[in-house]
Amino acid sequence: MKVRFAPSPTGLLHVGNARIAIANWCLARRQGGRFLLRLDDTDTERSKPEYAQAIEEDLRWLGLDWDEFRRQSDHIAAYEAAAARLKASGRLYPCLETEEELAYKREQRIRQHKPPLYDRAALKMTKEQLDRAIANGKQPHWRFLLSGGSVSWKDGVLGERSVKLTSLSDPVLIRADGSFLYTFTSVVDDLETGITDVVRGEDHVTNTGIQLDIFGALGGDARTLRFAHLPLLTDADGGPLSKRTGSVGLRQLRRDGVEPAALAGYLVALGSSTDPVPGMPADLAPSYDLTKVSKSTARFDTKQLLALNRKWLHGLDFTAVQERLPDGADEKFWLAVRGNLDLFREVRDWWDVVAGDIVPAGDPADAALLRAAAETLPEEPWDEATWPGWTATLAERTGRKGKALYLPLRRALTGEDHGPDLKVFLPLIGRARALKRLQQAAG
Image (cartoon, rainbow, N blue to C red; front, side, top):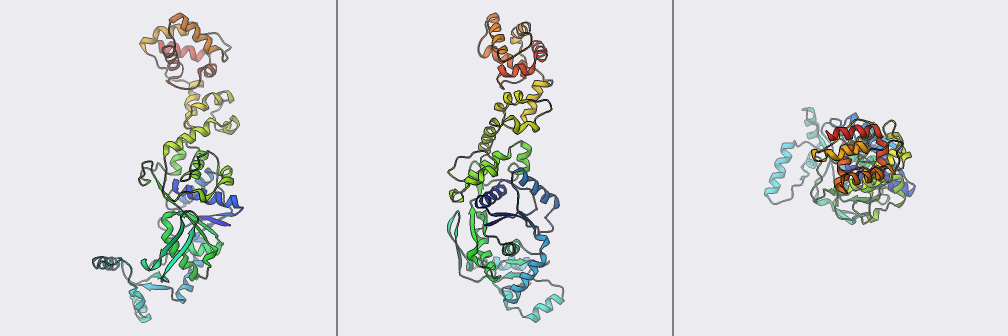
């Protein structure tokens, strides 16, 4: 087995890309196959080195590696050779129509209640006419002559699929400026690199029919290729997943503090009946099963992702996060705060509570309680018995209990209404900080 993930470095990866990358990677690793990362960068105007670098960085952050790496821009000679073969066989033919002329033809066919397909008028052009046009400064674009009939395959997710080639226009494979389109270069690469399985989004189903026709025209055996098309993602309400705000981009999710294990676990289970379990791809690959993916669209719900993120963080051992913690933070601190984290970046806020300066919250109605708390604050050393002993003394002295007692103390000591168990957290804050905050909150 050999699979490929082939993003175009014309932008940053989003969760849809990540889902396809993880599916390919897990499939290859489970079957002992090879994973090729290919940058489809023949669009020289839009492809940028910074996007190429970001793609590699984001994939590594997600826990993915690759056995082979390939840039399409390094293999132009292979595409030119393949194009020459198709031209020689008559399957690639030159066209001289402008965009305006093609648009006019489409409009005319629509008015005639005909499908807006290309009419293959260029096939009637003689060599002399072509040579004369080129001599006058025109450059042709090149279309692939579809074979007609239908192309069928058994899809690894969608089941039996068929594309009727007679209902499609002959696709342009080479632009007038000589640059190659993805439809063509992808097939040449798949042939040259020995790809056996193509796993990608459902929006490529029609492309698959066309590319299988090109594959055969180049001498490939379609029986050596297996396809699986994953249904596209929608938002939590079932609408199109919008990239407008960048909220579904991997780079933004990283900045927001989403853990790669949470995202990987969520994407692996998305669209299947399997409950998501957080984990890195290496942990998820052995049980990955493409046949469990539903044919229906999958809903990407950020709330579910964040719930999985919390679950992952709450179970992490100190050794797994030690290098990411602020200087001075120890295992006691981590075990105290991890159960209150939605995102790892919140660790810094809790470290400020323990080791830095915060603005304690106080209400004038609680001033007497907080003064009494400062007066009765036990001497150190402190342990987990300090908090219950101290609050019992305060309850007896002030008559307060429950929320009326605990909430003002928590607000004064941490500046928050909720947080770690103060039985464990108070000894980390220490007496000096606790006394200062109680006195400040009391006013």
